[in-house]
Image 1 (cartoon, rainbow, N blue to C red):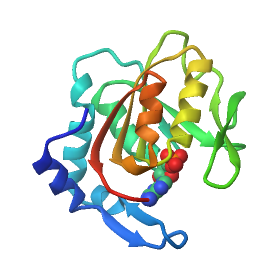
Image 2: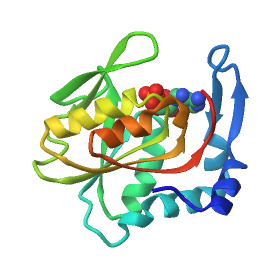
Image 3: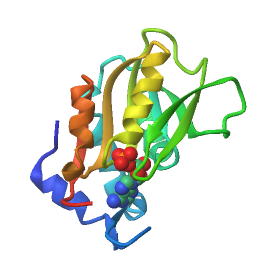
Length: 183
Ligand code: AMP
């Protein structure tokens, strides 16, 4: 599930790349420039939800923090609810947590334990997928609560890092709008 080359190039032109941020060797793909462009933001959200237009999606789960911005817009567009997946210790109510791998070490993410109901159809949203460690943790958390993870959507894919393939191996459909080579 990728998008057409003309649209991909138009959207890629709105992403700002910052070399060596936050550390040497990383090309940081900054989506704030896409979000700040009214046409690109609308177009990207329309394109992201296109496969599910008209189908029943109960909830959108967004990963802190850029996944909240994109996930909120996607939830509105699909008339779905929104569920925040946050870093440990940020949510006020009873939560469930899962450990996930980062480049160096592990961290934990959490979701309220009543945020999804058993059998609900959920789409996971974040800005970018790299190694897939973050998204894999979120899929596990949602499945642990009985949700049916229909798909995972990202504006940007870094295919060299294998994250999208990792999710596909977990039987999650993956939709991305743009790919960039390297890290
Ligand atoms: P990963 O768990 O390796 O798939 O990393 C995904 C998370 O890290 C996402 O929430 C991204 O926002 C962030 N991220 C990882 N690599 C980059 C990058 N090159 N540019 C911008 N954000 C990144």
